[in-house]
Image 1 (cartoon, rainbow, N blue to C red):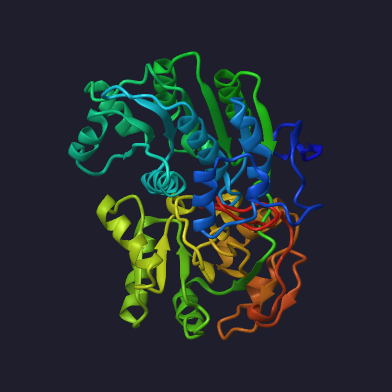
Image 2: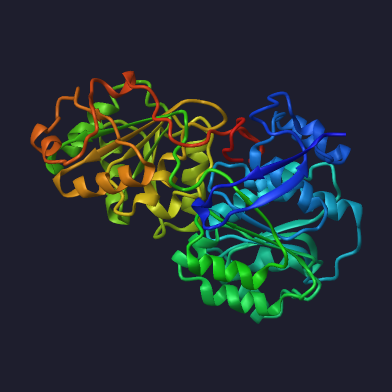
Length: 452
C-alpha cells in the first residue's frame, strides 16, 4: 500500500488547501505511473495505448478523491492534465455502475465555454473509454442541431456541451437533466469572461441536488470563489500551475519593433525553418485575417481562426494545422484556451495581449509533453506597458532579442524595464518560472503538471 502524503498548496488561486491521498509525490518518486493508480484494467489499457505512463500532479491529487465520489474544486489552467484528471474517474464510476439511460437523458454533463474545447473533451472521453461500452455525445452552437438531437434521443452516458446550445435543446424538450449523476464545470473563469453566468445559473437550477460536482478554473477571483461555494459540498481542493506561472521549457523573448515594420519582422522570422508549427496571436479578428493573408501571399501556408469563422471553417483550420497541412495558425484570444495541438514549435504574439493573464495562456500552447518551445512577442511603442504588466505577473523580465534587423533601440530604451538584452532568441535559455508538465489529460504530460 502506498504511503499517505499531504500537500500544501499556495494561495495563488485564492485558496489554501491541505489534502491527503494515497500516492507518491512526483517530485520524490519519478517512477510513479498510472499502474499505481486504482483504475480498472480497461482504463489502464486505454491510457497505455495512448502512450502515457506518468500522471501529472493534478491527476495524482484529483483521481483518488473523485473515485470516492467527492466534490472537487480545482485551480488548474490549460496544460495541467485536468481533462484526464476528471475523465478517468468519471468513466470508472459509470463502468462500475452500469444502467440503462432513458431517452433524452445523460448521466454526466461536462460544460465548457467554447466549441473547440467541447470537441476536445468529448474526444478525450472517447479515447479513454475506448474499451467501455458507453455512449457519448457533444452539443454546441454554430451548426445545425439535427445530429445532436438524434444523438440525445436514445440517451447518453456522457454529454459535453456549451451553455447556449445546451439550453436551446432543454427549452425544446430534447434534453432532460433530472437524472444527472455528475456535473463538471470546466474553465469557469473563461465562462464568466464570456458572459455565461446567467446561463450557468439556469443550468444549475435544473440539476438534481444529489450529484457529484467538479469545478475547474484557471484563476480564483472572488466571484469565481462565490460561484464555486454555491455549487460544491465539502469539496477537495487542489491547485497546480497558477496562472502567473509559465512553462519551464518555454524560451521567452520580446522583440522591439516599430509598428509599421511588424509585418517585415514576422516574414523575416519565418525564414527560419525551425518555425515548423506556429501559432500567431492577434488581438482582433480582422487582425488575424490580415496576418493570415500576409503569410499566404508570401508563400507561407496559414489560416485564421476566430469567433467570426463558421464552426466548420474553424474545425477545418484546426485539423489542417494538427495534420501539418499548414505551417501557421493565426488566432485571437478566444482560441487561446481551446487549441490543444502537440509539437507546436513557436508561439508568436504579433500583438502583445493587453491582459497579462492572456500571455500565459497564449504561450502555454507550446512546450507540451516535455518538448521545448519558443515564445516571441513583437512589441511596438504602444505595447511597452503590456510587457511591463506581463513581467509583473510572471515575476521576471522577458529577455530582449535585439539581434534582428528591425530592432528599435528607442523603444527598447523607453521600455522602463530591467530585462536583459540578449542576442538571438534561439540562443536564449528557457525562462523558468512555473511548474512544468507531465502528461495524459489529453492524456498526460510531464512530471510537474501540464496538460492533457
